[in-house]
Amino acid sequence: MTNEEEKEIETVDETSDTVNSAEETPEQEETIETIETEKTEDNEEVSEEDQLLAMKEQVEESENKYLKLYAEFENFKRRNRQEAELNSKYKDQKFAEHLLPVIDNLERALAIEGTDESFIALNKGVEMVYRNLVETLEKHDIKAIDALDQPFDPNFHQAVMTEASDAESDIVIEEFQKGYILKDRVIRPTMVKVSE
Image (cartoon, rainbow, N blue to C red; front, top):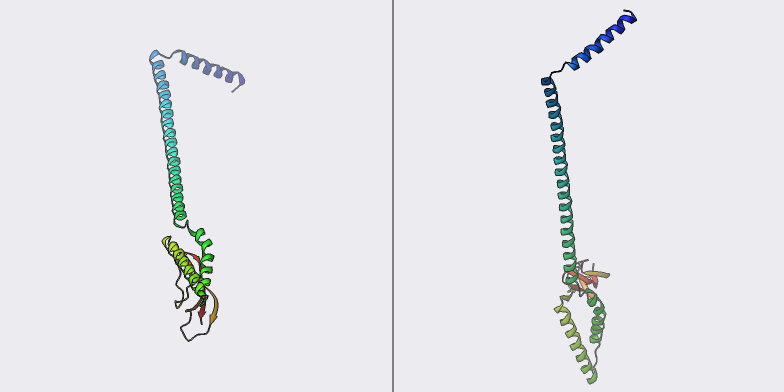
């Protein structure tokens, strides 16, 4: 084909397109408009569905955040309640720790023996104070640890010496300093000598 023939074919094609477009009937135009309307409606429906899905995701995400915050707050309240109970349970511990040396000194004073009448009266007064102090501590659940002739327990006893003995091994044979417990917590372990 020559260039002139190609140009003629192109011109024919262009004119046929123009004729075809000009020849569209009103029915064809309506069909085209209906198709375009349906396409826009479909797009609107799709966009509404997308919006609905996005909103559902936002609601779900907000709900999850709320549930996590609620759980965190409940855990915070539980920890605070446990801490308050623990503080309340052992509130007398520091006070007892400061009183233990006083009790030790009263016990040492009671261990001294004398025959003088004034000494006996003083000893009786010290014994009354000692008993009163011990009773007061017991009212607050602070009790002495019984150690003598008991099996050695490192949770309640502090061994400072060992000694060969005819008795069983690991038995407390002498008590150097009394230990005390507050409810179930050891305030001070008993200093003891243990048999080997």
